[in-house]
Length: 268
Image (cartoon, rainbow, N blue to C red; front, side, top):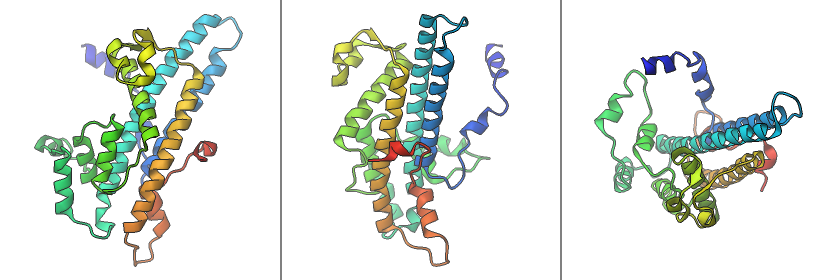
């Protein structure tokens, strides 16, 4: 009875928060989610840290830190979804690219370890999915930015969507997320040696403040903006302009647009 007692508490409209607007670029959707998370933490800071009788100062600070850690884990989960959705979008629009070759694309995908099983196809029945999403879900290592670079090179062979500095930042973020999700917020000795910035924090518990989530949100804005700018240039170089009068810019923005309510975080 335990599982059913949990599901009985699911909000009947909870799925609406995860529904992505049609024709909205993956980066724009992702940055909107990041802005919502950052705004939520700011709201919690105002409520929790008020000087009143409801909370003691230490209890409020600890509660806020727990929210920050959980929010950061969600933030990185949305980043993983962004990467998959952006890759899927590019796969699904290959027919609109010059020199499109499905056989060559299939061979490059297989070389990178893509194995689409019958099970992955069958579970999608009744809810049609585009091939790009099935392919993206069949690839692993989305927590490895160097590997993600290789995935996007399947489509644009000479392009690195993440620079070396960005890879270093993302490696740190993914390791922090791993420590939150898998080791109770403790940076274990084994995990500390994986990222140079964490080597002096082995066997120590993470304490993340509200300022951290804001800086993480800002940095993810910058990383995604840089990556999508490179991809946009590559897409424009190969995209076949429609001849039926369809809005070319609207199509491009739907594939690789990058907008956010936090405009300052997108400024280079």
